[in-house]
Image (cartoon, rainbow, N blue to C red):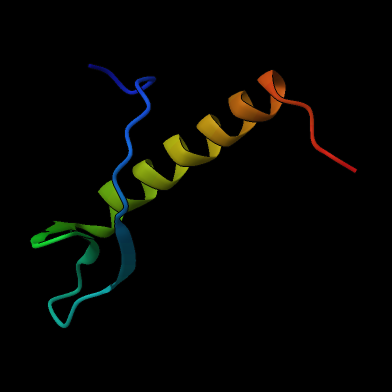
Length: 65
């Protein structure tokens, strides 16, 4: 299974700063909770990767309307 494999799993994603100056991605799926903390530089790199994926996805699927 890879990133392109569809799954029927619902999850909640929360993103915010911690009191320790980190950026937390908090994923909750059913009874599973995954807190992932990143320093601001790492979080910025992740944000850049997300934006690159957005641009690539838009190139594959044209926007509606």
